[in-house]
Image (cartoon, rainbow, N blue to C red):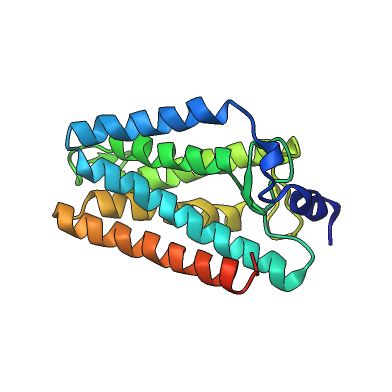
Length: 210
């Protein structure tokens, strides 16, 4: 087991890590969603939740990697958090992704056929947002806030991070946003979050793997 993994395990779901700043952070997230709900901007609400649900899926399999290897997760978040939910997911990260999905959806052009630099805007923005997120993660890794222990998930080889870590998030976010009805959006998001919840229950309390 790596030292960073042991450090993360030592604070995993430890309520003694609580810090007061998490309360106003929560209110900011709730306010952002309340504004969109008040405006009945359901496509943005569901797009935001779709991206958040995609991150939970990644965090679950990342925790399972650690369980089965007992070496390290693909990414870890071993320090400076108010609450570590899973070995690579702290409460600050999950709040961030709740906001990120809303932000990404609100930046989408109304015209789905519009092109940016000759590229369909949904594809261009999914790639651009993913690259920006990878850059932020590389900075966090350099500071030790995110730890990477595998050679195929490193700043010098960010392609897997791009393809698995972020691109599917924005693809799902934009796909849900562009669905033709609120009902379809609700079903899509319900399926993503329902699957996540089932995995959390099975691999968490039932099997004790994560």
